[in-house]
Length: 516
Image (cartoon, rainbow, N blue to C red; front, side, top):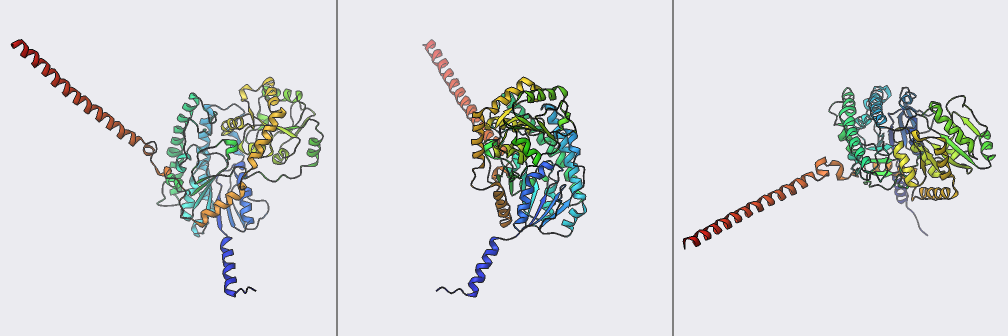
């Protein structure tokens, strides 16, 4: 019979408490994009559900109170961003528009964040946090706030890496194989695409470091003194949680401080509204889901392009569910279910949904990947060209450009993805996507808790601290070049000396023979 002493029981219980140490976590979402916040909303709720104390700064406070979850709601116009997006094909002009968008929203988000009274109370009251989650997108302003609060930072991104995040994290960024977020080409770019990537990478570095960071640094200086540069604070980020996964966006070279947790937002599907459920179940040949996201107004589609889509729908056997943002749809057909808002995740989970026509937003593509729904992608803005390239490379679907959109072209694209063999390959791809040693949400929680447990641990690769000339080994190549040039010069000198001596000896021998 084993007898436990009071002391041993107390020690055992103490160890259990250590294992489930509860954290005080701050999460900062300074950008007013709903889709960006949506990626991490379920993660935040899960952290609160585990007992951690959450303070969340965002434009999207919870409608109903959640235990351990406190909102600091920022004030701003969250619909304003729609004016930046037009229903046209991606172009260089649109990339310039993106940089202007980042500049305008990034500087404005910084001002709104720091001027909020509840946010100011955090540093005035010297609130203590174990770890701070900071969205990495259009502004590094929140890194200044995190520095003032003296807590380790976990960066979070609802998309792939922005062009200016590679160097700070030590992630290799070679235009020969690294996709550029705003350009097409995937992992096998041609020479023109490699030139494009190189030029726009330099351009983005200039816009961010010289313009956006300079303005934000000035804004921060109005509140904090002796603040390090934002670029230095960016390099001090302990860990980056990245919303991607190699199954879809291709394998990449990531250091230990970058973790792929793609698919965080994919929720367990819920029952559909009765009328929508009936519409799908009554479809003999299945359903095609159409959506162009929240930033692209479907009603802004040019009339000739809209007619091409409608004529294509009329020739397909499948019914269509269309997220349409207006009250009426011109020439609406009986096989179309139209609504301004639709439960996209739950629709794609239905086994009778056989295809998706989509603008290549990353969140919807991940939901399609999870449920094994093939996609016809039509990129329009932002990171969608890069996502469209991944769509084809992964085998999840095919892409079509807005300027190539016609009835004949669209029908050909749908025939490809509706083929039974293509759909079977997508189902296998979905199986690979789901096959992970740990669910993305659990992995994200593990690493957040890890950083809080070891705030002084270094996960960053040494590459992040190198200057450009060191990273590219330009100093090494210069030394080798000097040694080669010196050796060549020395060789030439010795050769000239030898030739001169040989020439003089030859002349002397000739002169001597004449004398004789």
